[in-house]
Length: 286
Image (cartoon, rainbow, N blue to C red):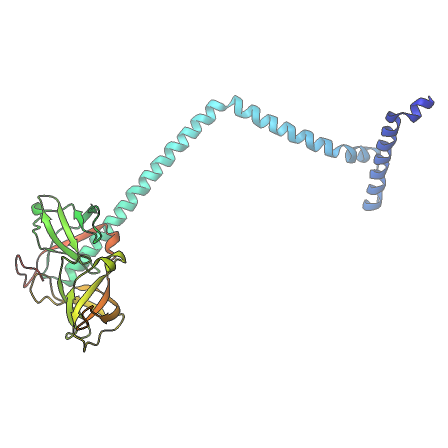
């Protein structure tokens, strides 16, 4: 018997009893009431019941998944199908919205320039590979009345001119290119005239330049530059871009200005081709 009182089992039992008594005393002192045998047992066993309930819930969920796996799989497949249909409808909606927006711009051009003969809005098929001046192709050609040297525009401003035209595809050279020269002037002063002609440094920034401007000009940052229409290849008064900065040409004899196009030519999706307008001259370049 004495060996039992000295054993490790007896010491563990005493520690456990002391733990239970401590919990009982704590409950009485904190709650301000006597603890009945039932509530005492509930207090002691609560942590074990919580763990047991948690394990039971997890087991129940696992068994449910296993027993209803086929049903859940079918539901999952149906949900995927519904998501696919919704994504398809969303894509169709976005395409319709974009088409309506392009038609709206087409109507704006038509209303503001009633002397213009316009192609239907043309989708941009893609940019010409390795061309830093962002030439691109469109899905309209001679079958739609387009010829070489037709101005290409959006409602916001001038984009460029058609250069190669097949039956249903045309290539457009943009105002970023040094191979396209457009007579232009400041909208605020017709005496501040020059030539829109790009270069590689400006094109890298998505800009073009107004060169050969008189040294006594009044150009300033923010001025709108429009087509002069002096040769008749481009309509007069169509927006080109705004002045970003003004400085001297490399020869020091004339002024040039950095021009930010009214349209971001690097991100085009649709354009309109002016097939004819009042005062147009065929096969010339501004």
